[in-house]
Length: 175
Image 1 (cartoon, one colour):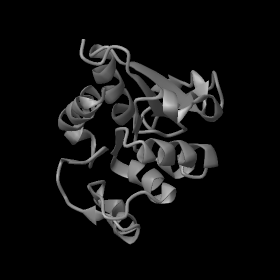
Image 2 (cartoon, rainbow, N blue to C red; image 1 turned 30 degrees about the vertical axis):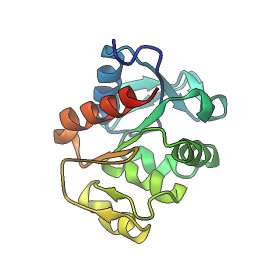
Image 3 (cartoon, rainbow, N blue to C red; image 1 turned 90 degrees about the horizontal axis):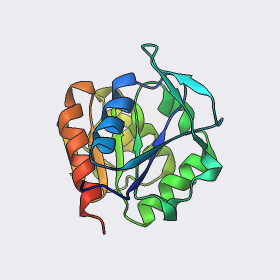
């Protein structure tokens, strides 16, 4: 399996978009990656917008960017909470500095905005946060999935097949 031995951080908080969390997790696990659900409280069951639970296996402080091969951030309303945690923003910045894949979909772009890593990066997102992305210095396009270096972005659940494959491909390219 091409992602065997890869460790991925999957951020979670209340009201994540169910498909935008679970689809990429299953896709990456099918290819052999270990995906670690990470939230503010270890053992807490966070509930998605449509009622699907996700239990945090780790807390943000337990994650080390140097041990991770990448990160996925779901959309929904969770990103508005995630971007308020300094530990999350620090993890994102360190992964960015190391040029490790960061996948974000829909409203997850808010986390990258708050981390201050979008200057000159071409991205997509839900059109609802286009202005936020552009005001953070990003070049925003209305396309299903965009890969700009190590940043992989998508708009909405309908884009998940292309997005999840792009995240897996980016992870596979890393040594």
